[in-house]
Length: 554
Image (cartoon, rainbow, N blue to C red; front, side, top):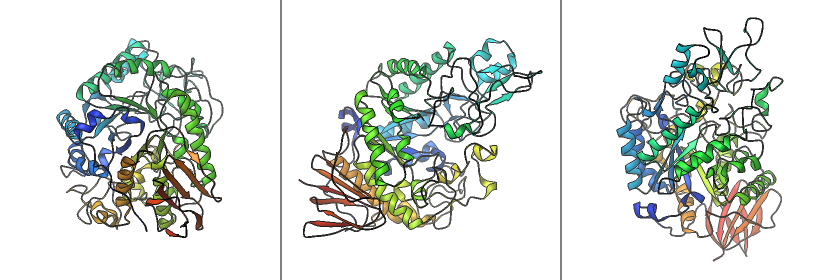
C-alpha cells in the first residue's frame, strides 16, 4: 500500500483558531514566497491578491499558519529583503488594503499570518540612509548605521576585514570617503542597533503590523543585529566557511537577546498568542536555544536539521541534540527541509552527500523524490513545529538549468560568497497542467518555468492516489487527528536495523529507512501512512529503501 490513513478532523475554522492555545508548539507553517506563488494581474510577478486567492488551497492542505516572505516597499535588490519602507506594501505586490484583506480572509479560513521582518539592515533607498548620505560625516543620521573612516594612508582600505555573505568586502566607500557596513549586498546597509532610535523605530513597526492583525513575525538574520564592540577584525579569508560553525564578531552576539526581550514586551501587549520566529544561524543548536528562552522568542529555525544528510545515524544525532537543547528552555523544536535560500530537498537528496545546501546538479530525480517524501513523513512525526516551503508538497525539484541571463540572485553577480543559485528554488510554482505559466498567472512568470512543470502541478496531482500532494494532505490530516503527534519534547527510540530510524510516541510509531535496501521490521500495528509501497505478512513489514511508515498501536 502506498497510502492509508484514518479519518481526520477537518481543517481549522475561525472558531478553532480562537480556541487553540499554544498553537505554535505543534504548528505546521507554510512559507509563501509571494513573487512566486500566484499572480493576480498578469504582470508575471506574484502578489498579495494572488496569495489571497489561493488561501482555500492552503486551508485544504491542512496547515496552521502562512509565513509571507517580504512584500514591503523595496527596490528589490535582494528580492525584498532590502526594505525602503517597513509600513508600506511594494506596488508590485499590491497595497495595504490588499494586505488587510489577506489577513482577514486567512483568519476567516482558520489560518494565521506571519510576516517577515528585516531588522538587520535596510535598503540604501530608506529615508534614513539617504539622509545619512546627504548630511555627511559626523552627522547624527550616520550614527543609525555603521559608518567608519577607512584604513590606509588616505582611508582607501575598508575599516576591517569582514566579508559580505554575498561575497567581497562587507564595506562600501561613499563619495565623501567614509565607508558603511553591509553584511549582505551594498544596497543593504546594516543598522546600528546601539543607537536608541533604531530600537524605537522597530518597536513602532511591530505595533503597526500587530494592529493590522498579523499573528507573528519571522525575524530575518535574527543573529546579526548586534556587532562585537569595536568591530574587530575576524582574521583570514574564506570567512563564510565559518558561517554557522564558529564564533563571529558580527553574528550571534549576546546583545541581541536584550533586543528580543524588549520586543517580547511589545508582543505580549496583544491578545491572540502572537509569536516570534528567529532565523538564527548559530554554531550549535545549544546557542540557538538561547533565542527561545521564555522571555524572548517562541521558535527558532533548526538549520542543523536542514543541513543534515539523509542518513539515519546523523539524523538521530541532530534530533537528540535538538530536543535536549530545547527542553531546558521549554521551547518547541522546529524542523524544516527547504526554504527560499537553499536547494529544494528533492534535489539535495537526489545528489551524493557532502555537496552542501546549494547545488546546481539535478541528480537522480526519482531517488530524490523518494527520499524527499520519506524525509517529510519523518519530519512531520517529530515533536514540535514543522515548516513547509511552497511547492515542496508538489515534489518540485530545483530548476538547476536556468540560463545565466535570467538569474536575479544578487549573490550570483557578486562572484564570490554564496553560490548564488537560490533562483532555482524560487521559480513560480505550477497550478495547472498548461497555460502561459501553468496557472501562476496570465502573463508568464518572472523566472522561466521548465517544460514538464505542468505534470507536477496542483491540478495534475489533486485526487491522484500516491501523488506527493495527496501524501502531504494525508500526512497533515493524520497529524491533526493523532493525539500523540505534534507537540512534545521527546521520542522513545526503538531497536532497528542499521540505516533505519524507529521511534515511538505514545501509541504512534514511525520507521524511516534511509538505506539503499529494503529492511524487515515488526509490523507495529495499523498502518496510518507510508511514503512508498509497503508489504506486511506474519507480523512483519518489509519497508523499501528510502521509505517512511507511520503506524498506530491503538
